[in-house]
Image 1: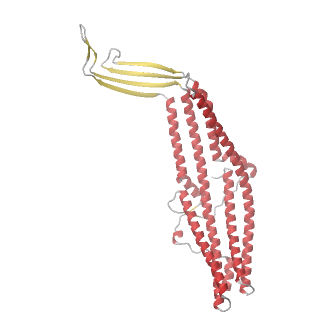
Image 2: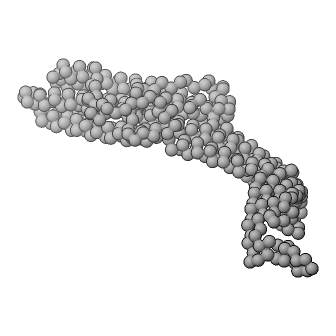
Image 3: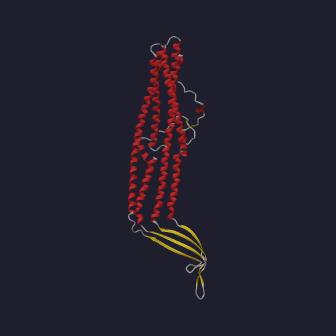
Length: 425
C-alpha cells in the first residue's frame, strides 16, 4: 500500500471511466459551436427575420414614390329608364349602366416621399448592422459557454485526483490500523477527508451537467453537448493597434454609427416637409350606354398640386423630435466608443495579470503536491500524524483548483481581448 500511495501522488490519478451517457455524448469544437449558434440560436434567427421585416418596410416606404395603376368597375340598375319627355321622347339614363375606369397616378414632385424612401434604406442598413452585433454577442456567449465546459472538466480532473489521493490515504490508514500499527483516529480522519472529496466530485459533475446543457441550448441542440478539447484562441492584436481595431471592427460600434448616421439623415431632411407635392393622373373611362356627359369611351388628365401652408405646428414639432433623436444617437455612440476603449485597456491589463497569476498558481500547485508527498512519506515512516497529511491533501486540492481557475481566467481574458478589439468572432 505505501508504494501504491506514493505512485498515486507522483503520477496523479486519472478520472473515473465516463458513464454510458457521457460516452455517447456528442462532442463539438469551438468553431463548430459558434457556427451552429449563429445558424440556429433564437436571437440570431430573430435578427435575420428583422432584416426581412426591414426590407418589407423599405418596400412600403418606396411604394408612394412610384406610379400606381388601379381599376374600378360599377354596374348600376335603376327601376326603369329615365326618359326626357318632349315631341320625341328620349332615354337620357338607361335602366342598366356599366362604368369602368382605369387610373394611372404618377408622383411628379414628392420630396417627402423620396425622403421616406431614403430613410427606409438607412433603416435597413441599421437593421443589418444590428444583426451583425447580435451575431457577435451570440458568438461571444457561445464561446464563454464552451470555455465553461472546458473549465468544469478540468475542475473534475483535479477533484477526482484529490479524491483518489484521499482514498489511497484512507486505505493506507485502515491497513495500518488493521495491522496493529495505526489507530482509529487516523482512519476516521482519512475517511472524513475522503467523504469530503467525494462530495466535491459529485458537485463538480452536477456543475458539468449544467454547463453541457447550457452549451447545447445556446447552440440550438435538443441535447447537451461536450467539448472536443481545450480550444486554442488566437493571439490578440498588439496594444498600439487594438484601440483602432475596436473602433473599426466591432459590430456594436458599427451598429451605433449606422444608427447615428440614419438619425442625422432624418433630421437633415426636415425642411422637405415644407415643399409642395405635385401628382399627375390619367384616367381611361368606359361608359355603357353613353350618357349626356360621358361618351362610350373617354379619357382625362389631371395635375394635383398640394402646397402646405399651416399645419398647427406639426412640422416644427417633428423637426425638434428628429433633432433630439439624432442627439441621443450620437450620445449613445460616444458612450459606446468610450466603453470600447475602456474594454480594450482593461482586456490587455487583465490578460497580462491573468498570465502572471497562472504562472504563480502552477508554481503553488507544484509546491503543494511536493508538500503532500513529503507529508505522506513522513507519515509512513511514523515521524508524524496524519493531520499533516490531511492538511497537505487539502492544500494540494485547493492549489490545483486555483490553478484550474487561473487557466480558465486566462482563456476568458484572451476571449475578452479578442472581443474588445473586434477580432472575435
